[in-house]
Image 1: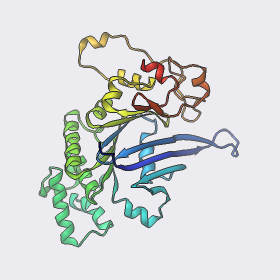
Image 2 (image 1 turned 135 degrees about the vertical axis):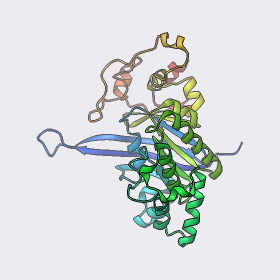
Image 3 (image 1 turned 180 degrees about the vertical axis):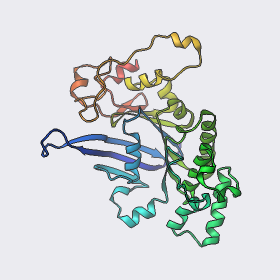
Length: 328
């Protein structure tokens, strides 16, 4: 069996935002939006990242790409620490590391024609001459199933799905091999979502792309991802193959997320499901030990004292002191 090639490795990544609290300016407090996060992305796969809104998913994405500077940790792209690179090297490496943002409406300059929007990364990266850039733009437009005549129009003349296709074309302009998709379909109509998801899949197969796919919608992540990471309040709870995590989740938080997915079977609506109880932890003052313990029905004294680390359990990584018991 061939060993998988590691494309990106995140090690102990942190992003803490300082906050002022009370009248004392000497007292330093932080929102630990991303706190000691580690995972690996293999070449050619789609790694899903799921969690409720506000858990730190988008902050993690922006920190990986250095759109915001990290507090600590490493991001190794092809073995090189992206976070230690100077401005010139970061600019060069960014052509390989790209992102598709959530809002196709806010991602496009309203006063620029689509052709210029797609061409912009090529100009910045000094790609060829004018004729070569024109040829590349036409190639990209065709790749995302738009027409050449669309290049002369402005963003407001397109639907949400078409705008996201324009964003994807611009993202692929510099021929990246790693793309972060940050909630790329959440702002779109349900009927359009499947079209964009299928386009992303087709492009991945055609171009050999690797995705980190971020969403709060577990059904979407299940459709597109090979493996998934589950995030809660700045930390990872569980990492595993998608089918295994969905069929037999090990972390209590993962169980609650999956139980919350609407089911097509009417009889399933009457099944008894465990409910979340207890206090919702504050990101400015998270509880000691496991951050989920205030809402977890399986929590013990150990959970309240000690922070669980990701460790191998049943072929995946789980940050839960009682994972083996819950697996039985």
